[in-house]
Structures are given as structure tokens and as C-alpha cells.
Image (cartoon, rainbow over all chains, first blue to last red; front, side):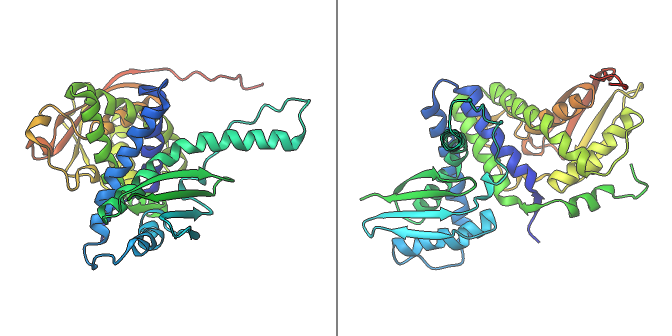
Length: 176
Length: 185
């Protein structure tokens, strides 16, 4: 049987990875911290993709590779599949996860609600704040996807958007 | 500790578990990135220890909540609990405690293997790296949260050619517990 560890090991290492690079090592250079964290995810994505595809033939086209990410790869890493895949048929794919595992336990300190603001404004401000904070935790999975697709011979750039926690979307832009 | 001889097994069976591959590869990629960022191996050891410390101070809550253990009566029992329950609950492996000093303040935690080092081989250029040093920080951080100041360091490492992983654990000070509130408040 494959070796197992407690899931809290994964949660802890991800949390601490972001804390190390974004808060401790590069507190004033968020772009640099993001690049480092993404690079670590990229490395892991490369290696995981290699392991997950040992037994199967090469992908026929980009769409097939992306579908593998949405189904098999996501299920292995996050125990569920991507919920929705959209494409503009010109090299941009949007992978939506309605309940992204690493954001399900994400919470913020209680918002400081000023008296003069309406509740919808406060909600908006709060959700913007949450998205920004959650974004730090998406550099690693963006790297994972880019690493896996690179291994499949699909050069791309990957970014992420948080809509309403714990949902998020990964945007894959294929290069060339 | 419960009388059961393998107290960690039930705990490990009860927590959410995942395939170790993602964890092992993520840790490896972090070490690799730190080696690129810092060049000095000693500094990488220090960074790993700090990361571990920050994890340990949070992980202790998870441990105390789920491990189903009673208060340890002395440091010997604490060490046994770390290798039999702590390592098992998180990493799925157990170790042994050995080499106690005469006043029972210093011992060795021995691990035959651990999931951090699966697929790992260190290149010549990494002499001096304690690859699993994060574990020292985790133990130090966790113990500090239960009022024990310790010094924790690797003395043997399979990746450096030793037969086992040996972590030397030294109790520096048992900080008396201070309650933040009086009983009647």
C-alpha cells in the first residue's frame, strides 16, 4: 500500500511555505515571494505529472492534457475533480473549483465594520480582502498546474482568481 | 499513555490521511528552493528549523485534541509519546527512544525511516545539510507550547550514510505553568 501521512502535514507545510516566503523572507516584495512559491509548486507539478502518467500514452492535444488535469490529477491531489471547464478555443482555459480543498479552512479576522457603511459595501470590502489574502495560497497550486502541463509538453502561464471562498478559478493561457 | 502497546496506531487510523507523495515532493521542492536562495547550507538548516518551529507551535493543538493521551508524568514519558504517538499520528512512522543521560534530561529519538526522505538522494554539494531539520523545529515548537524549553538537533542522518536518523533532544528548562486567569474570574 502507498505510504500515507496525516492531511494536517500538507496543510501545515503549505501554510508555512506561504508564511516563510511572503511574510518572513520577502515581506516587502510580494511579487518575488509569489515567484518563489510558484516555482516550488512548479517543481512538484512536474514530478507528480511524471508519476501519474507513467502508465498511459502521450496526450493527443492540449485539450486532452487539460482534461487530465481536471479529472485524474485533481482527484489525486485534491480528492475531487474540477467542477467546470471553459475555453475560448483560442488557448485560454478556465478551470473552476467550487470548493477548493486548500481554501475550505480559510478564514479571516472579523472585519472592522465602520458604522457609516452599508452592509453590502462592507461585504464587498470584506470579500475583496478575503480574496487578496486567499490569493497567496494559490501561487503554489498555479505552479502545480503549470508544472504538470509543462511535463505534458504544454507550455503555459497560469493565474488564479478567488470569487467567493472557497471557490476559485485557475486560468491557463497556452503559449505559442 | 494508554496501556495499549501501539497507542499511535489508533490515532493515525482516525485522522484524515493523504498519499504521502504530495507531502514528500512539496518538502523536497522547498528544500531545493531554499538551497538556491541561501547557498549556505547552515542557513538552510536554520530556515528549516524555523519553519518547523512555526508549524510545531500550531500542530501541538491538533495533537492534544486528537491524540487521546493523558498528561506525561516526566520527560521520559514525553519522549516516548513523541516517538510513539506524535510521529505516528502525523508521519505514520514510529521510532524509539535511546541513550538517556543520567539525570533523564537528554535522550535520542531514533527513526529508521520517515516519509520526508522517500525518493531523496543528496548530491555532494549538500554536505552539512540536515535534510529533515524541519522535524527538530516541530518538536521544539510543540514542546515549548507545553512549557518545555528544549534544544533539538540531528546527530545521525541516513542521507549522510548513517544507519538511522537520530535526533538528540535536550530539556533545558521546564517553565512553570502560569495561568492567565484566576480560578474565580
